[in-house]
Image (cartoon, rainbow, N blue to C red; front, top):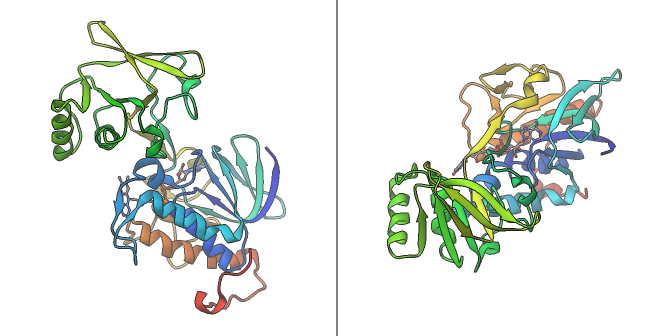
Length: 339
Ligand SMILES: Cc1cc2nc3c(=O)[nH]c(=O)nc-3n(C[C@H](O)[C@H](O)[C@H](O)COP(=O)(O)OP(=O)(O)OC[C@H]3O[C@@H](n4cnc5c(N)ncnc54)[C@H](O)[C@@H]3O)c2cc1C
């Protein structure tokens, strides 16, 4: 909790928001960055950190997680203040025309310009309805909804629950390093890409992965801090106890525009309508970039978001310093100014 002042508030620490911090820094603007997730990186880190991206200019092949590390490093000289694990819930204007951003933990940040880089909205995992599961979530507990560092699973016993791409892809990937991988799914057919499903089943036949089918999650055992086993059950109520160090439930992410819908911005089908020449929304001082913004011809790609971030930073400069003309300089000329 706390009360802060900033030039710019960036809502969302996905690739668009992170690059906006860099571009704002290049024109002398300081940023506070808010994200509902505990870690920066948006979809890249939460959904596909170990998948290669092939359409980042100048990088023929780059892992999504690596892209985020590089964007973080690029933004670091400008010392952004990150507020993670907190939603931005309100956006109101103070009498002096400065925006007041309210966070879910009671923190407030005042800024003249706000860049909304909120992707599909704040997102979080669909939690299985297991009593007491929250006690085992996060570091040390054993229940994770995202794979941050694959190495954490080396030589561990892992239960993966779900039948979609994430469940199947991570089962195949972790089988290379884990002591044991068990996949719990309620039917024999998976909803993953056919090639991946075939690989999963081949690994199961070789005994590398155990398919726990048709079962559903039923309970978690542990000492209240660290899980020791997962209880699964058939529809008939027959149960099995799977001793495990980790449970990875992959039941998709709930993505909701959430509070953004209440901020009075012009919206169209869950996206913020902007003028692509400035990235300005219909509300003075509020800009939108990345997946959350819409304009004719919009491409929902990371490379598009980068250009939008540059455009928004320049527009924000004219709001924060209306009396200062901004002369565009190449970075080769200016270098990276001290933050
Ligand atoms: C499997 C997969 C593969 C992909 N492959 C590619 C590819 O090869 N090339 C490519 O260009 N694109 C790819 N994409 C799309 C790309 O990931 C998105 O276009 C990109 O992540 C959008 O970036 P963003 O910063 O706009 O939003 P996001 O990455 O969605 O980040 C938005 C962040 O805002 C936060 N947020 C939202 N609302 C709030 C709030 N009220 N308070 C606090 N935080 C909030 C969210 O928690 C989230 O972390 C892929 C997507 C997926 C799912």
